[in-house]
Length: 193
Image 1 (tube, helix red, strand yellow):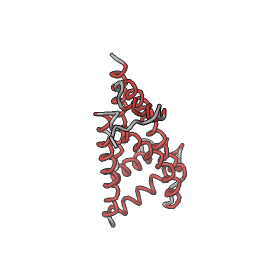
Image 2 (cartoon, helix red, strand yellow):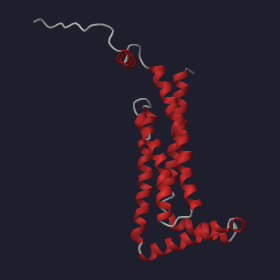
Image 3 (tube, helix red, strand yellow):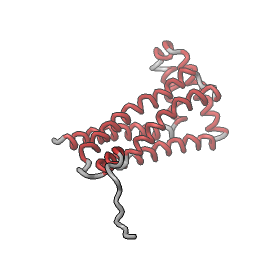
């Protein structure tokens, strides 16, 4: 296998991993009420050792479940926001098909993803306290950005290497190099006066 082929394969493997994670994150935002009921029941039942070891977690899950149950029963339109959150994850996942198809041409999608991952940290630090989210939960939210950026940085590095290996001689790279080196002599006009 040639080096460009190996790089393309690595890029695609990491992108599939990232896309699957985005799809799972999105898909799990649709059934939040059911998921929280199951989690709260588990912490009160078979997973009670976890609740005993982490009482703050059990209390938080119970509080979130109560809030979601109340919103679902009295104000179901509020959950429409989490439906849009789920949809956004799915749409963003689709965007990463561009770099899967043509990584060099669509590296901007990777840059977009890196910026989005970086944005998770200030969002969690600012909005978490405003919304009454415990700090430890904000740390979990920030971990999505921290761990999400790792495969994107790897993919970006591989794309840059692939670009360098596959750029045609005398192509855009040669033009960039010539532009950076400056003029090599006087410009001669071909126009007649």
